[in-house]
Length: 136
Image 1 (cartoon, helix red, strand yellow):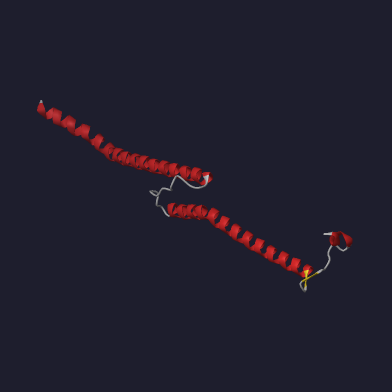
Image 2: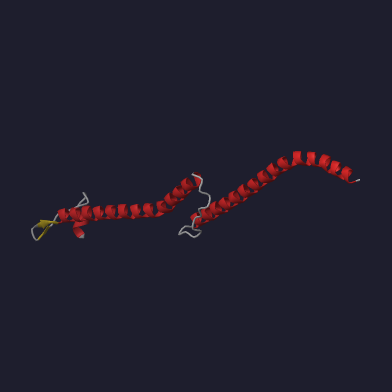
């Protein structure tokens, strides 16, 4: 260690069994740096894949719903709380859409029925009146 502070350049060389220690330190540093970079890339890739998986599933689900399949439902539980909230909201929205669609169909049927009954109710009183007259 004394040699480190003796030289103003910040490095020194010493023979260790025929090898220069500066070369050993440099090679060790490069190797450790390469290992750290590799581990960081692997860790980042794993986190990206883990995070993107629920997003991709959500996108696929939304495409299916966009194609008109309103009876699909997402799993409510997810590893991430944000996706659980989104899943619950989307499922509730689909339930509401189905409910509103059923109400709309019922209203349309009632309207068609009313349109069908309106002319018939205008005609019926004349026939009823004529039938009542013939009884007397």
